[in-house]
Length: 375
Ligand SMILES: Cc1ncc(COP(=O)(O)O)c(C=O)c1O
Image 1: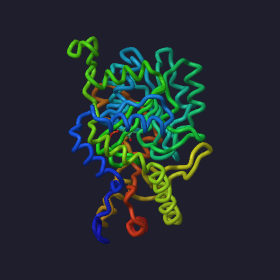
Image 2: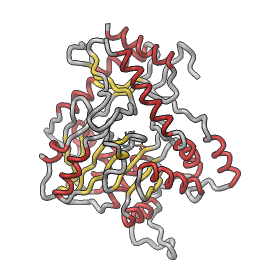
Image 3: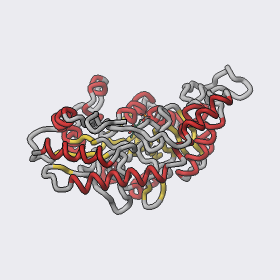
Image 4: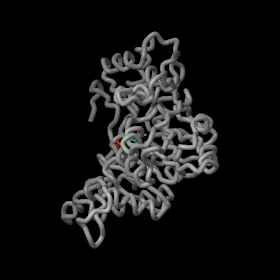
């Protein structure tokens, strides 16, 4: 582990529960592929935790979105609304399906989009909305669900960052027609690499299972009516996930404790916009502790991150907006679009070390370094 002057990494997971025991069990059983029983245990346990009927484990949170979009049958001619301020996986999945991504901006404080912004982009071609809950607070979902019902739109809920979080007491990931999670090591439940698609709809669930598994057909295994992918999660990965899931409540509490610890100690530093601790519908789970430099600060996030790295503090930039991605501009997408809040967050925002393994001494060092670079 880190000594007092060693670099404090942006994320270190906690793996000291049953992870090792279940991995050993898995190896001794010989069941290491996706056929093993830990995959089913993770699917059932995670679905139960999120309050959904079906969980389909996949090999990461990005392909979970591809799977959800393909299962809904979205494709050429369909418009799908999504936030510009998100990870590329969201827009990439829409573009790869042949559907048209339509971007909306986010709020400057919560980084989340709103029903009002979505409503302005609905056309007769709109078929779905890809909701992304960002950095620890959920999107205000009730107005989005009303809008979707009124216009007959499907909701894909990307809850990759929202393990353990709720919206008005309902679990994030239980709110859309289909939802997705990531199990990357910076998530509250990790499998190293991994993800899950969740739904209550048995037909959608069956379609996701087929798509994840190359659309092999029962009875006629190597005869294919459709094209799928190999997006399977291995039993080894699922074994780690089952152990992690056992501690989700503890991890959620710990994230909130980290958020409160930083918030209290950074509150008096001029020029910092700190995460919103709560909204009318949720307590921040502080998936990451993001800070935004106010306009009065004479340097940007990239410079702040450089200064912190020079002091042994590892950080990460905020998402870079989809409408400013060279790859999409080269495809002729989003030309001349502007989403000012997303643009500002990308340039002024970054996040501090936020992993579950952080100690008080490490956070004190982070706070001292932030104080130093802001002077
Ligand atoms: C909102 C969101 N969606 C999707 C993903 C992609 O997940 P993965 O890294 O497991 O592919 C992430 C990853 O952090 C994310 O934050």
